[in-house]
Length: 168
Picture 1 (cartoon, rainbow, N blue to C red):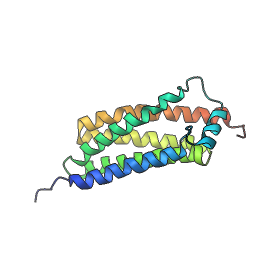
Picture 2: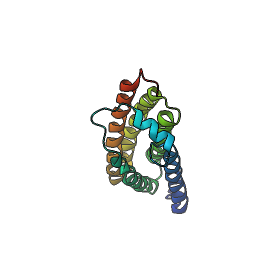
Picture 3: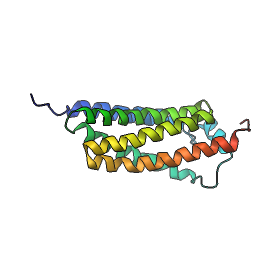
Picture 4: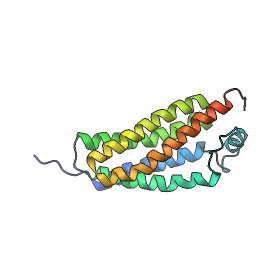
């Protein structure tokens, strides 16, 4: 019996809901002017010289857009184990993004944030690989996210290292 393609309405609901939840929760824990306590905490941290300017973090909008499109392409791919694996990593990316922010800025645990960043990077690499096995363009759409997560992981490690002996 041939397998049917996934229901598009269900896909839009699940994928869109995951992105929306990730974005809303991320905004809650992000060091942004809309979160004054978190913003002040972030400003007090000693940062590495390669920390980008604050406006560079607006990259998350396009990254979420690309991830959303990648998720949609994966959702619409032929059902099977490879598609399920890619979707698992895609949904994992949404949750891990929030966890990283919550650990680092909600809980203010820079060590846990740095360790979690390694897990997020591993998941991002697995997402790109799993997407490649399902849909080449979807995999290409995940590459900027993978690169940014790698950079964010390096920043996390440096924030931990530079501030390990500081009470902030």
